[in-house]
Image 1: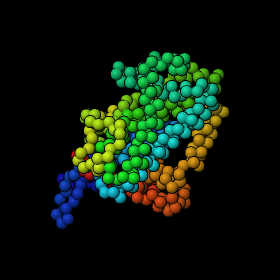
Image 2: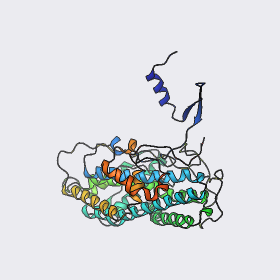
Image 3: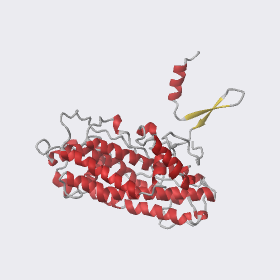
Image 4: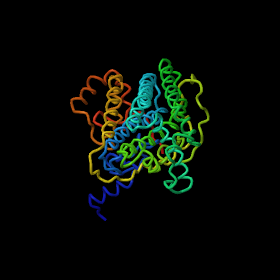
Length: 403
């Protein structure tokens, strides 16, 4: 039977786990396992534009920050996947600089949100300090309870005083999140120390550090987007929707429990064992064989955040909503001014996937400036990143075939 071109393409689209390789002269095709890419093992945040009509300042803020969070997740996956296959001293040195740059950027951005952006949002919304973050703790606990019960917990939403006051099991989530800066600093310190002694590089140590970090970082990056989306209701005029009624109407946001990566990145929900060693001290044992990789515990199934589609607003956003935008833009501008321009822009531009996030907001001259003026200083480290300067996907240079 002769297939049309359209039918053939349709068949190929339903075979995502196989690539074809044609032998010269014979025309035979050999199926080979695909190589993993950086949308795994820890999954990305689904673009909000696919589930939400972005019409409110809170939507725009959540959308922008979700793209930044996805860049963080791509960086995490990039380092984890390639760690066992980086072997000679030059490559190890460049790779460790990437680890240092990525962990330092995530740490600085997290501190910016905690010290400036989120407190600014709370002040604008007329909330006490810490209430927005407490909402994330509440989301995490209630979402886990919903998953365990196999149903929705929206009928029993907590009151405002319950969020601010006794949080019960929420304290576990709060304590884990408070550990995030220390986990990032541990990874960064290890990369700096090992950078001076490439022979002490240990892929298993690096992967264990990443797994510990991911157990806190990944749930936080996903759950926090739901908090920013709720600012639409929280910023409404009191006569229309009070803060208390807004808190009661918060939907259950899917929770992410502690989630180090699976041993086989192509199967997100596969079960494996906990790494045998948790790195409390820096490894000095030399470069490990790429076959001797750790066996991290499984990552959870992470459903996409699916907020209810809001109705088209009849009036302009309230002054509160407009103030949220100014706070967000001011914080982002401050971060850009203080960031190392030879490190952060060249790294971020190569962690943005245009097919997932959409077209870049940078102008063509700005992209060329990053590529031609800012990137060359640490060019060796940027070769590990998953996209080119235009946001086009490219294969990871240091990775083996994993079935």
